[in-house]
Image 1: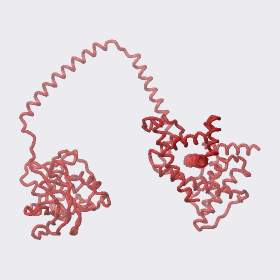
Image 2: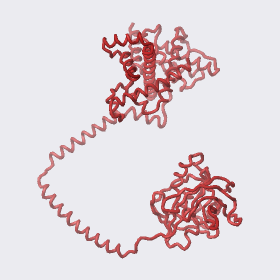
Image 3: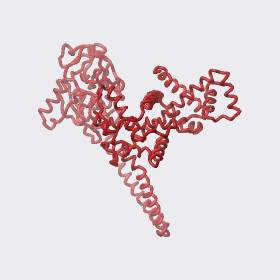
Length: 188
Length: 366
């Protein structure tokens, strides 16, 4: 019971991007994943990538409000890492994968698929944002990420008034949406 | 309503900032206007994507940060950072601590000086200041006397040197060796060079070959800063019809001219030079002739007076020969090296010229 509530706290922390929680999850699980990857034709760089992807899979899951896993965090991360690495090996035509006792007992296939879809979307948005250029990029970030108000934005970006800044932001947003949806429609 | 206002309304609707009346009205609008409905759906989806992107981005950064930190503290078995990346990490890690330490030091210093100031005696100061005043005026008197004397001496010195002739030259070694035409410095009493920024520097003549019309000067000014030369000086000859350009000082500003290689030999079949079709004026003499790759193929030297635009340039291989001769004569020049690689290839012409003009000097003679 006690470990369970601790695990739930960690998952909540992960959902909130809390540094302490992420550190704990990282510290307690990284080494076994690294051992898995290195024993299976991977490097420590690969291990880092795969492990971080696995944490993002878990993050996407808890973001949907599911804080109860059917297993321990450790088993979950291990299973997901293994699945992700297997996929990568298959892409590179290097099949063999030997496990180290932690047999895959949990269903993570759906979560991994969901993550992969979201990762493609992430890449699309990343491309759209980087294609936006300045000052649009900073303008959009100031408004939608930092949630600053228009008057403040007008001052720091050198627009004569809030209406001008609003107009500019509108144009930038339209461009960003266009960049994003062109890719999105191409892909689907 | 225009598009901007519609979008604003949609954003307020999605984020729940509308009053209940407004909300009812908007929902009605949504039902009757499929375009607005579509916009709400689309925008909700987009903003979800955008928020998720931002959150994932933050998480990714956080994960990297945690990874580096845990590896540094040996809490995970991952290789540590090396070199620059490590310094960046350490800086980020300790910048807070450093800032705090610095502010503590600052506060301590301020407090301390305040204490010293409050306990130090501050009467008598007026008398001291007066005394100092007198001393300063004494110094002033002395100073103006000196000035007067210096002025007297100045009047006895002949006026500054008037340079009457001029040409162009360019660096061939980063230590300040300049190549130019021998005819420019013929019968010279004083020689100086002036760089693109207009700064005058004195030079010494280290080599003259009247037959080939080549001279090598060395900048003697201590303010000259050594800089690697970006252009190559070709040993092989260029091809007919190659596009070439030159930089020179026919007047007080550097001037660019463009043309082509017309013949591999010079006047009356002279093998020392080659013929170039380019607009050149007196003063262009000694200037580099460069091809499109930014390689020096020759030094502009003479012009046929009976025809317009016919100019002769000394082939660049003779610069190599001249230096070899100089080195054979005097071993102190053994270390000189003519640049054999170019960093200008593929660079846009304007950029090339900008770069090269830093290495082209006006040669002034009196």
